[in-house]
Length: 136
Image (cartoon, rainbow, N blue to C red; front, side, top):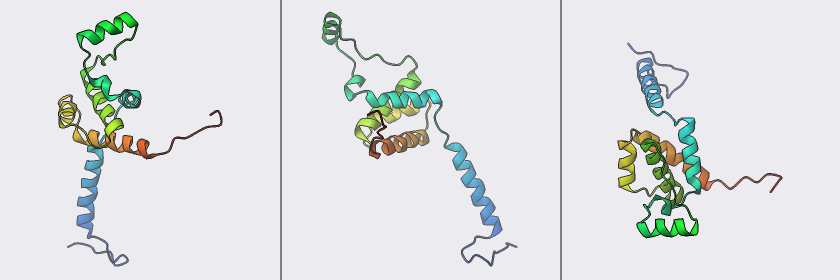
């Protein structure tokens, strides 16, 4: 027999409360956040352009070496590189992410929950006005 809290008209029976609270705690545990290194990759991706995702051709590399312009290098860790690529798209295009980048992100070992955390964090920073201190 379920107990009904009469002090709250909209209360759930005790059995449903315990079932829902365990489901919510499982969902919160499944949605883990990024590590400090991964957050720094996301923050550094804010300064990169979409052109940094392209692979430079032979002519671009030769002109870069002649005129002293280096090319954007990729990250050595493929997992962090997939995160960087998705973060660049999120910073530049918002929620309009290419499906191929999402597939690479998941193939690198991340989950779609982490992609949602990334998008929510970037969207919040894109919308928020810049904070200016006394020095500026």
